[in-house]
Amino acid sequence: MQSVRPFLAIMSLAVILPWSAAQADNPIIQTRFTADPAPFVHDGVVYLYASHDEDDADGFKMLDWRLYSSTDMVNWTDRGVVASLKTFPWAVQSNDAWAPQVIERDGKFYLYAPISVAGSPKNVIAVAVADRPEGPFKDAIGKPLIAPGNGYIDPTVWIDNDGQAYLYWGNPSLWYVKLNKDMVSYSGEIQKVAQPADYQEGPWFYKRAGHYYMAYASTCCPEGIGYAMSKGPTGPWVHKGKLMDPSPRSTGNHPGIVDYKGKSYLFGFHYELNFDMTPIHHERRAINVTSFTYNADGTIPKQPWWDTKGAAQIAPVDPYSRVEAETIAWTSRIKRDRDRPYDWAPGVLTEAGDAGGMIVTRTTNRSYIKVAGVDFGTDGARTFVAKVANALPGAQIELRVDGLTGPVIGTLAVGTTGAAGHWQEQSTLVAGATGVRDLFILFKGKGDDERSLLDFDYWRFAR
Ligand code: FUB
Image 1 (cartoon, rainbow, N blue to C red):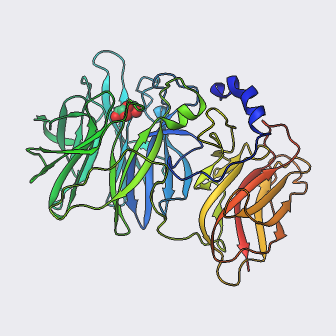
Image 2 (cartoon, rainbow, N blue to C red):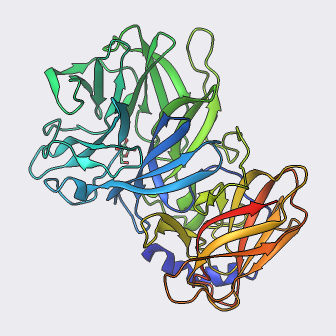
């Protein structure tokens, strides 16, 4: 967290200022900088693979690929790192873990990723395979799937109805190959297609209702999102216009499109999380989402630039089942008040715990997690249970509904959690938690503003 340090003085000032109302839900990940969204729907879950800008990035500093998942499009669970440059030991171990995409075939999950090798040209496309969407992904062939070529970045993959899989990629040209059924080799030559107008990079290839689509980051810079359609998987690609106009505040963008539970979603990114922390542009991006409806002829209406609303929640959270602490609609990482620039605190961090699963840490005094749309039911909850570790004396978890200043429904005075790394469930009585409410889990204590008050694995309520 080197980039945080210059702001510590501002941060200490921030904590004595009053809290503002809860933030809205775009960008959808606040705990880390994420880019190049690659959504993938499997078994009723949206898996969102992302590239990852390091916290101290200036230019591109990208070492690994991360996964988030959701079943409601608003609360996103951090599933951790699924692959990294180390997955491909033959690659240059620099900063080039760029835009990935994952697809499933015959029960295996294939991750295609652009990385670099020594020499020139340096851009290659690698493939890794896993037995589960969560990985871990392993290098599939021990060498590049697509050998070096200038601009060989940003792979996108789709399996057509006849079983033929296609891999497209490229900046600023657009190429494809026909993948073999094994998904880790291809047949025939690499084909370069006539790219659609305004094409820059970040292709997103798919078929829907008989139409083939190629969405992409449109001409740099700044980049909006353009798209083309075709009657076949290999073109010709007919430019259909912009899905989103560029914004001068965002040099880049990158589409990912899926249907989920009857709605259509467009993902992309902007830089507002970076600009919330500093006026200086760094390659530190943040993924956004919006929902849209296709026109009757299959075309897509242009969407406004990312707003703070995000997508509507499509199902409430069940608080009576275990909810991972790293399931978050919004957290206090960034400034609390969008009208008061650079007033921010580091807030919670999600990371791999010692036991392998993800946990929430860096629960600094007055940091919080918002979980949107929690359905407590008519009779409501009577008890709150949290699994915690490494608590400082006096650490508390305060539970509020409706907002950061909304009613307190309970406070868990976290007792001693024993030796470092010793996890235990602790509980408290709650009252007033009925109906569907936004839940705010606040961390309070006497720790200094940088110190984690406790580590947090999961929570649930009981009736
Ligand atoms: O994230 C690194 C690169 O920036 C991607 O590969 C491009 O699509 C652009 O988003």
